[in-house]
Image 1: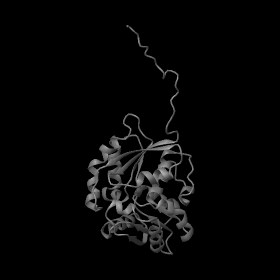
Image 2 (image 1 turned 90 degrees about the horizontal axis):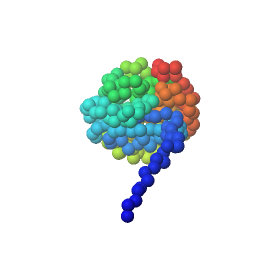
Image 3 (image 1 turned 120 degrees about the vertical axis):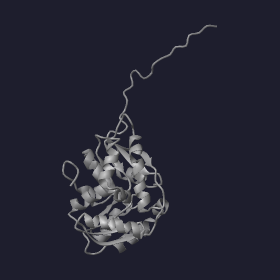
Image 4 (image 1 turned 90 degrees about the vertical axis):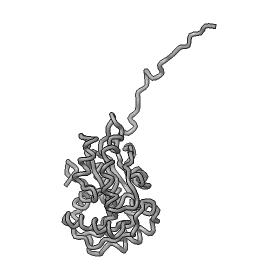
Length: 261
């Protein structure tokens, strides 16, 4: 029996939806990261979507291993929605930014996304601290003493008076992410000096974002975390009108129109 199969076109009358009406965020997460995507999706407002690629890295977290990531950043960035693009690119490593350098990091990202603004935890945090008018700060990190010494030097060079910096002495991302919320809360209270204008909790691997509001109430001052700061700065760069609630005083502040200070 001869039959003719009809081949139809069912898409002719479909109007496709925008899956990210609030904007597209490209995230360069570390290969060993277990927290950034979860934290950022928790903080970013509905309608803003995150598209991730992973940068090759290795534990333990040492300055040499952090610097070694620089060779894979452009490749990873190029793999985020090629041909479609994003509204902002985030590099998700605080200590890695200090190790590689902000200018070099931006250059490596721009090689793949030449017309797209980018941010990272250090650039975002500096802008956040200045938006608060902070001069004296306390810092809590999960890092070893050696990494903390480099972090301290960076913030001192930026002109901040660092009253204290305390760390958990960890060198593996899994251990950092597995720190209990209560341990972070207790360490934050211990690390923050009374004279500090605010507390900065460093590292995108730490699950610290959900502790911000309780800590701000306890300490009576602002608390800035790595993931909170990069969401805040990314929204500025995207010129997004979206509001964020429940993640600290930072989201009550804005920057200048170019998103940097």
